[in-house]
Length: 501
Image 1 (cartoon, helix red, strand yellow):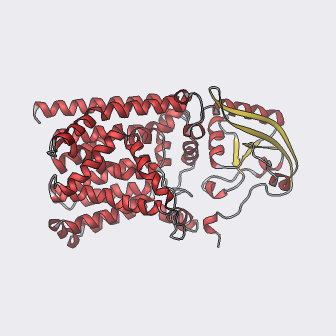
Image 2: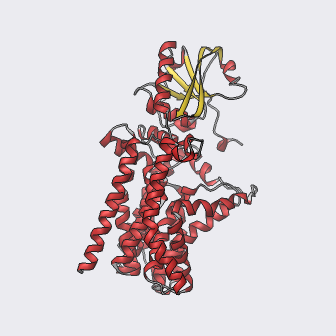
Image 3: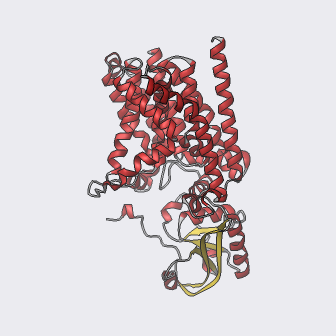
């Protein structure tokens, strides 16, 4: 490695370490989201699968809390640190596919300054380990291409298996790889080799706990996730959300570079055929599905996580390899120069807004409900009401409230979601003695109240109304009801809607 390349590697490593450190600081003081609290509860009861997703997010959170405890930082620690191997995988992928330390460094840095990576590894969801695993899928496929050695297919299978343990979206990697092999003449020999099929068996073996869990639970997770978009639900309005949300998640300047890179790979023949087709198939196969999905149902912005590794490599190729005309060159140079500062500022602004609401003048925004600002104080007031009433257990109406209360109430407090019991099938059932006496029910104030509680209990008494606030903004008001005289089983054990006829 020459002196110039060594400086690029060193500087890239320092930038990425600084970005990871920034996320760790933000993770320590930003309250967890309701999804993170839910997945944290999963991590206390590890299993081969869960109602919503495969189990990798629970493993990641469990590893972090074993190191840093049941804190905001503990929940997020390992997810954030996984950005380091992710960055290595992207660096090596770009170096192999398109050559040169500069392309590789640009790819690694661009990925880390996207909101998909910066916020997506800070806020721990299944998309965080999926993003990391997707980076290694690309890296190991690049090693197959570089070395021609079949043994690397086993590594590809392991990476896909890890991706499948993160989220079912990873199943599209199989189609992308088949299209890649079929589209590049020199790679078609792999269809006659046992190695790709052995790699597939490795992926299947790693994914088998999820299959077995679903087999034991009426295939509920598969039915829930694979049945999201139904052909009869044609609602093309959702497709209008795709591009704006991806511009935000990629950050605008990285999005421009990525779009120019994909164009250059297709029409300007930038790079070798096998490298270009690999990037294109890894990107467009998944994007094509989500475009179709958006014609029938909403596609959340973070679902695009697995396309970001090839996307940023395309962006780096646009910035460093393509001979653009002067006007396009100026645009590329501007985007390359300001992409990292813009991404860092956007990340910092989002963290500031989520914690304080300052940037919106303390008015309500999308972060107010999802990030648990004010929940520590609210939970303390709920605990005071519980102790005053003598109730040993708290009932809740949804998984978000359940997770937040379990996380912010004193450890060991009995918190039970009254409905959707399938979500907690991996947890021990609550002690019937705790549900037989007094209970308190915590939910947002709703028009009409909760008439079903009168069917379950002989006496329902409002004992408190508590506000969750972010600064001067009142986010929501919760009612605390004392429940007495249970008429029977207080839990709704109805099957999930996915299993109804």
